[in-house]
Length: 377
Image (cartoon, rainbow, N blue to C red; front, top):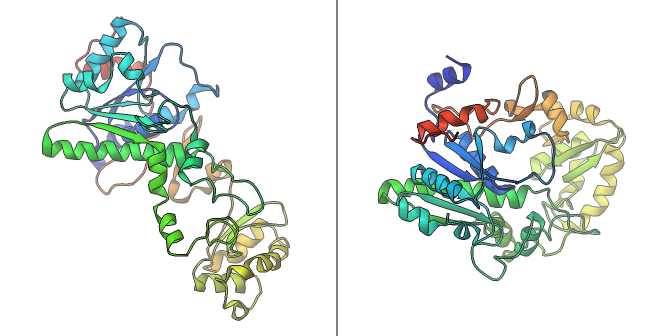
């Protein structure tokens, strides 16, 4: 018995054990959503299109977003390969695709065809602008969906341009995560109805949902439309990053008064002189007061200093530093070759797929046979 098998026997079956997912491989949110489902135990086959290349290049061994599932290459312009894909879809619980709207229909693999052949099929469609509407056929990337949703404008310095938060908010937060949520909800609904359905997952929709609290705050008068005077945008002197003597940074999240006062005390300042700390008109001058104090010590010195003070002060670490031993809760796993994030969340009984578990081409034939399909010669 392998270590992976022992883990599952000890902790129980994975939550999505027995769920079959057919993924038509794409970029960003599509493989991320599929990865989340696979981490939870779904048995996934990834279809890669003939001639498709990773635009960023790099060593495919470290493309962890495709972890846990074998891939097979099909020429979707070939009638024979399209028929093979249809056969897999008939046997799947979930189909995931992230092509431009209309592409799957032109290939003969649209929801009308596949759902007619498999009425229990959940057909999840991932896009930026949605399957219909004026922008559905326009190209876009994370920064564009974030810009038109209203989510990009508030991010960045008050005296500079908006700053894209990597591709975390659109691709992964508003896209792939909502794709996985939608599939899980549809699987639960299918228990009641016995029928599948089509999911129209658009990044711009997901980003809008992520902005729910901000929308409320604006209408409550708790958030201004511009940048530079809001509690969480880096304007507050007690909720921002500061540069230390060695050119590193500490992150301060001392929002509530007890934490604010502890932070001030830790800096050697009297918190009684900062009772109006929530007044935005005072933030800039107080940041100017705090900056030289923080710049007088190294990051390590400040973290040691605040180690016994509950003031929400942490070091700003690089990902490599986290991988070398800074991971809280063991949130990264590693082997001899690499490191990668551990699947989440954690369950009391069920196990999750280990991110270092290899499910490569050598496993494809076995997965196909488990689906009742003969491997191709």
